[in-house]
Length: 498
Picture 1 (cartoon, rainbow, N blue to C red):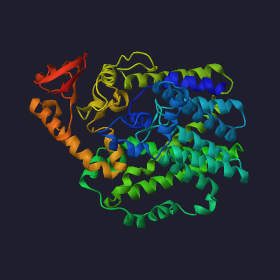
Picture 2 (picture 1 turned 90 degrees about the vertical axis):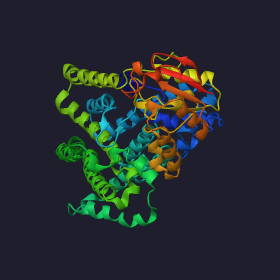
Picture 3 (picture 1 turned 90 degrees about the horizontal axis):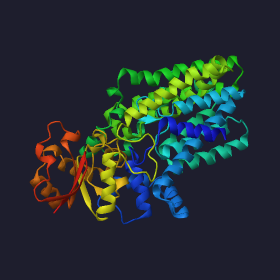
C-alpha cells in the first residue's frame, strides 16, 4: 500500500504524457505490432530500435488480452514501471538501512527527484511516460538487492533479473551487468592504484578493428547529439559526473562508521563504477578512431549512479537530519516536490500535467494529429517541419505514435535511431535534406516532395501561432495553391497535396 501511494505521488509530481519524446519511437512500434499495415513508408526509421526490446510486444499483448485501448495499456505499463522502480529502491534501502524511517526517507527522495536530469546523458532517472528504460532499471535494482544478500543462491536470481532487463532495454542491462560484476569482484585487490580504471579502458582499443568507417550521413546524424561528445560539455555537466564520485566516497566512509556493510559495499563499488565509466567515456568518445562507439554513451552508466546516490542520500538525511520531526520532513519535501512539479509544467506548457486517456486533448498539435488519425487514409504519407517537435507548445509529441501515419524523417528523434543503426542513415539523410528551408516552401517545393517521395499530405505550423521560423513567409498562413486544407486550428493546418 505504501508503494502504491508513492507511485501515485510520483505521477502527481512529475506528470504523465502520451506520445512524447522517445515514445515518438516506441509508440509506433507498439501500434505496428497491433496493426502491421501501419507506417508503410517509414517503419525503417523506428523499428530497428524497437525490435530488440519486448516493450512493444508487452504493451500490444495487454491490448489484445484485455481489449483496452492502447492509451490505457500504455498508462498501465507506465504505472507498473514506476511502481517496480520504487519497489527496487525500497528493497535496496532495506539492505542499506536498518530503520524504517531511513528506508522511507530513501524512497521519498527518489520519488521527489525522479525527473531530475542525469548530467551529460539527456536522461531522467525515470521518464514522465512509458519507456523501457524504467522497467529495465527496476529489474537491475532487484538484481543488485539480491547480490547484496551475500547468499550464493541469490546470484541465480540476480542473473535472472539481469536477463529480464536485457529483454526490455539492452543498453541499460549492460550497465547494470557491469555494476553486478563489480559488486562481485574483490575491489580492494582490483584497485591497488588510481590508474587501474585507465588500464581497463585501454582494453577497448582492439575493438576498433570490428567497426567499419562511419558514413558521412551517419556522422551528420551523430553530430545532432551534443551530449555524446564530452569535449562539448559545459562545466556544470562535468561537475555532474565528478561530484557524485566524491559524494559516494563520503557515503562509504559514513557507512563504515555506522556499521552498514551493504551500504559501504554499494557506495564503494559505485565509486569505482563511476570512475571506470568516466575514463572509458573519455577514451572511447574523444579520439576519432572510436567514433562508432560514441552512440553507446558509456556515461549513461551514471543513470544508475544518480538513482543509487539519491537513494542513499535520502536514507542518511532521514536518519541523521529529519529524524522523527514531521515539520523537518515537510520543510524539505514540500518545496522540493513543488519545485519539481513547477519544472514539469514549464517543460510542457501546452499540455495538461497528466494526459489522461479518453480525455479530449488541449494541445493544438495533438488535436491536429488526432484529426489526422481519424480522417486520413492509413497509407497517407506526411511531410512537416523536420524540427516540429521543438515547436512552441508542441511539447515534443511525436506525430507517428499519435496520428498512426507515416512521416518524412525529422531532425529531433530519428537521428537517435540512425546513430545506433547506421543502415538507416542514407534514407534519413535524403529525407531531412529534402525538407531544408521548410519555412520558405512554396507550391513547387511541395509538389517536388510528392514527385520524389510520394508525400500526399502536409502539416504547416501557422506563423502567428509561433511557427518554428521567425521569418517564415506570410504565405504559409493561407492555404498553398493547389491544396485542400480540411483541418485547421490556432497552431496547425493539415493540407492534402493533390
